[in-house]
Length: 153
Image (cartoon, rainbow, N blue to C red; front, side, top):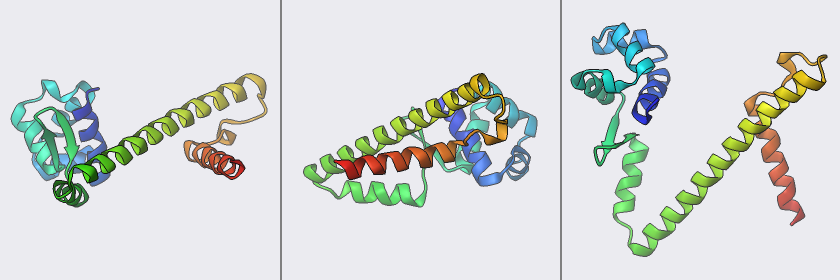
């Protein structure tokens, strides 16, 4: 699924809770929206995609990269445009480091969750599926491990 389709799907759930409510609000048939999400927006009429993006506050940066433009996004862009070269370098460096940290943690959590489920299913048939830690629980565990490691250094 392409990035724009994923962003549309995510924001429909976040802002409207369902494709039905979204379709009613925009006056677009629900089948059109469901099809666009399932098959990707590339096969959907351009005007329909534009209408969906406008309703979800999604803009294309450089005509390619879809982003949701919220008040926070606008505020960041406004402040960023007023920084000097050193400030821009500092902000982009911190942003890149945080992005890498989040991606690494998300990957580690996904791997840990998958391994825990495989291990539980393979070695311990007594554990039921509801006893396998959730993504949030694994994330909390990962965070606690990181914090305990920080105290040892």
